[in-house]
Structure formats: C-alpha cells, structure tokens
Length: 92
Image 1 (cartoon, rainbow, N blue to C red):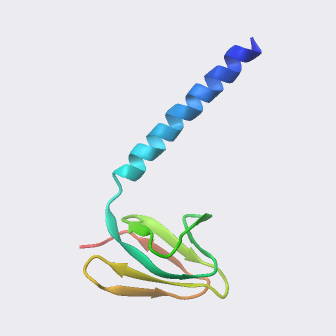
Image 2 (tube, rainbow, N blue to C red):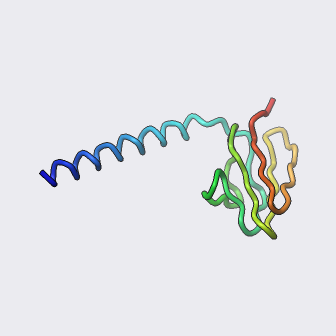
C-alpha cells in the first residue's frame, strides 16, 4: 500500500511541475535584468541573475544594500533601489 501512495504522490508532483513549466513557457518576455547586485528576487524568493529575462506580471524585489537595472525591450531602463518591490504588470 505504501508503494502505491508514493507513486501517486510522485505522479501528482510530476503533473504539477508540467503545469508550472507550461505557464513559464507562455510568459511574455518584456526585458532583461541587466545588472543585479546582492539580493534580487522574482516573487518571494527565486533569485534573479544578471542576463535573465523578466516577464509581464512578474514581481521583482530587492533586499537591503541591493539593486537591479532592468532594460525593457524598447530600451527603457528601470533602476530598482534597495528594499523595493516592483510589479511589472504593464508593458505597452
């Protein structure tokens, strides 16, 4: 019985990961994190590295003594200072 339960949990986790991957694949790229210093994340805790894409409806957060420069597709630059939260919900 334990083996069946473990397989069911693994199967559900695999389906969940597939759904998450499909959602990320359809996210609209709106720019790139050109410069990242110290603690910069997307959402609550996923680190953003320099050179990574940013997408529509993403939340970028910076910690203390942290900053980021986001360059949008139209070459607009956004400087994000320390302890800031920015929701990238509109790009026209």
